[in-house]
Length: 613
Image (cartoon, rainbow, N blue to C red; front, top):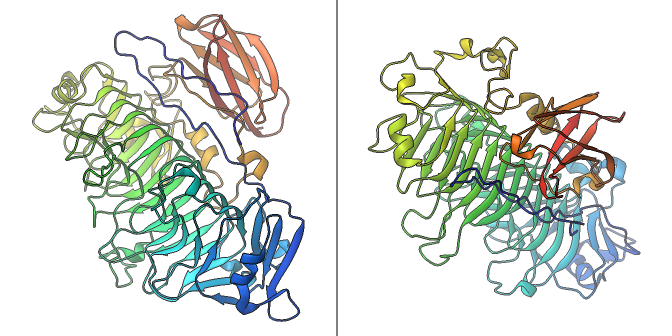
């Protein structure tokens, strides 16, 4: 669905080096379960097609048809889904009643397997292949697997298409249980070389291999948009494809894959990272939990934003306009690795990346919390809380330009902010982050000395010796909200608390582990959010009956508009900086959006608030 309007990126000149923030996705897919006008059945007896005739049924189905498969039956083979004329949907689903399947707002789990038809390929084969141009297929309530090791359990495009018209498109994978062979694994759950594709409410597991990359989801030849929402994703290599909308997912690696761990099951599957972008633009990653990652086939970083040219074959590859917010990273040997361009070749650099209000804990000292390589531009890291044992940062290669590193809490580790050959503190900041905004950060864990002395850092940096002096609510139980008595409460550069907004973070991730997401109407977002670089802040968030908007002096005047998730205007009033109070209407819990415009009507941005009555 195309958005009814788009808010253009508005950049306020803040001196010669204005920070430019990312654009958010321009299109959000509607994944509501479609209505069809006819039904055909594939089952044991008394059906339109016998159990061995699934391919015939798919070939015969016209747009607007539901194909019902028999719950609990195994359909063996490799099936293809062809291009058909017409834009009505073809639905392929279990014949089990809806009451025996997860509700439309709930994630699939293996416990539902008895109610699912099983589509099982032979070893080395793909169970479901979407042919060139195949479109408007909605798969729901199926189990997909293989009798042995296979490369792609589902293949939406084979990567050879070189024209948009040839790509599979308008595909929805809804409440599927997709799993590799439990003993031998599988390379990929779904290959997403397609356009307009959604993976929602799915359970994808046992994507694992020895000595090679494996992924729950991976795409390398599809333009998107992609909607990756409310899934359990288990892959030993990278877990996610490039592009668009990634929300409410649980990324998980079982510790039974980790050699040396008490739960180790005997096979050291090749583990690389949790999330990687190599060629992507306008990506929103929001409200996910990423759990367990260790140094094995890679060096331990969990999140990689590192464009790759495939040895020069795709010199256009770059990563731009990435918003990473309100996510939780648990149990990793490293944090984030940002690279401006390929290590060997000068492709266009990564730019406009925002990392804010994220929490990371149980991060070991195997690698750094943040690594900066090869000249990333317009990278904003603000209001994050990280409990890492390793060094805060490392830097090498071309300098990172237009970096904002502000209002963060992070572990100091052995060296704090350091870069290759530049010393620590100001030496690295001046060498690798020239012209940066580097302030109001709390670096935990050093007793002082030449690397932890405040004189080696810009003003407004603090070095508490441990978590106790920071003033967390309950660090022993991983509650990293700040107490009102914390010296860093209301001490951020924007007047809020240093570190992540833990209350909002908890709201965004509250249903990740339970696997519940809002109805399809709410998944489709009609509001294009844009957050300016501290142009305005909102507190409290979550809110009950009132919010206060704080603005910079340059933005005094203008108008505040309050909207619901459909874009309906609930309230409008002028604002006068630096603070304006807004009384919220009496509404049930949910999400609202605050839009700010200047006196001449220019859009400054939109921010989300969560209602918590």
